[in-house]
Length: 290
Image (cartoon, rainbow, N blue to C red; front, side, top):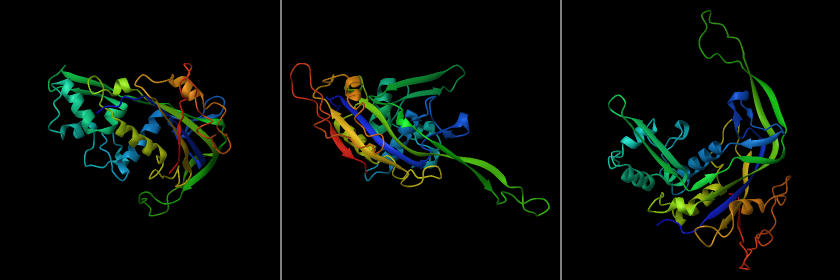
């Protein structure tokens, strides 16, 4: 059963001596804007959420799996879909319902299913618009980037003369320290069973749990274990499907209230948002990182 509530959320995270999201167009340096504000793309954040949902205690079925973290033998999205014999692209409505029921990330983030037909000029494209939207993450203050030169002095292949090959030079970049935050929402209209994906309140709880621990099992050379941490997740559950107050005002209620040095927040009661019609305030739930 789909949710009848709108949700908003914010995630406060820290980066220490790590590259949270390299820019391939800039030598894989950490992403920053012209004011040296650090950035993590929404695509990167969704990948970490998907990875975490696959490795939690009760893992979820995920359609868009990276090759490095694949949980099955399939090498592509098409192969993963073809393995589901109960999904028939000839009926887009039933295909959409079946895909949303089977894969968590499809009913959460949506997906475009564009595939070629068996004959020239044929094809099918089935769009699914998901209720969960994720913003890019930005640092609260300008970040400092450190770069070091590295060398590889081990032979990749045998040389003709049997001697040691030339050292390979490279660069490694990292953020010294930064507090980042990103926002997101769950649109109940896009989650409906009739016209949406069937995203439920139970699914929302799974997302909240994944956000609290989204950097677990995410270690790499660029992001060593412990270098990235979720400090807090702020979770607003509205009393109705359309929302008690706009997402812009909800997200804006955190402006200037996060300590840029530690990521510390005020209490939930201090972050309460009063309604214009005199009803009780919208009070968020504040959860610590895993």
